[in-house]
Length: 329
Image (tube, rainbow, N blue to C red; front, side):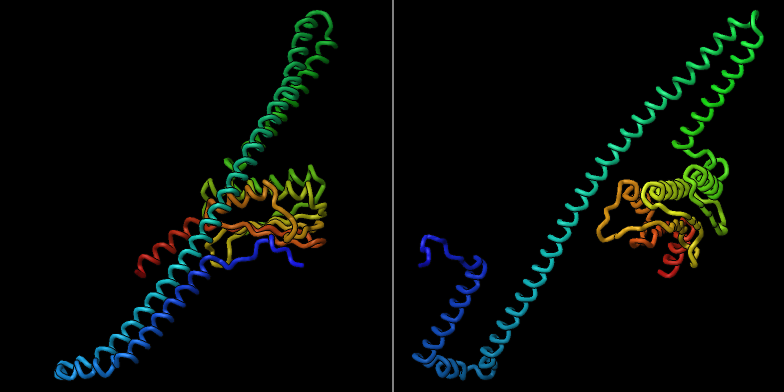
């Protein structure tokens, strides 16, 4: 036996309104037809308009009917356009909300990474830098004590102080390179990438080949920094995840000379892009590319390595295209 207390499904409110409106239209049409049959409205109308034949008023009913159908067609078209506009607006609002949530998450992760980097830098300054400075102070105190008594102890303290100073110099140099690569300012992007590949190969033990083509004029600083940081992040990901035997970096212009292309390919284990999620490093690299009007494209498959392609439009090419567009206009 059916449960009568259970609420029955009801039709949507909009559909019920459409049906009621349709019944009203049909009822009005049938009522008009019945009145016309009872009163012979058509014959009466023809007889009344016969006196005004010279003005062709007898054509008005057909004209009015066509006009009514035209108004109905016009209203239907406007309704469809309104529904399409509302649908597009809803899609745009949903996309804007998604982008806003993505930007908030990215900002949160960036803040977390900044705090992590600051913490790591503070630890290195306290532990490594502080220890080496303390070692130098101890050795200089020993030098002062042994200056007149023990020549062998004096030379040993001097040697230890020299080693501590060199270690301190290397530590500071490494920290400075992490914060800002000196070769990028002194020698340019190509030399900085070459030094990056060589130092990364030495640390990781993975072969890293850098190939570059003639880039022509010097590139702006913001492009140099973006390309260097993307290459740095790609090599870091290879160290952490790829388990590769070889990495190849190629820096060149595209065939049209309008974009700068950086390609980083490895022969590691790869990944399934449909299931993988981008880490903060690749998200930051994508944001760098997008901020310069470029794009970051990743190709990978399980067991087939990974290929990362960064494309950034060159300012000279963009200016040439803008000039051509203005001349054509």
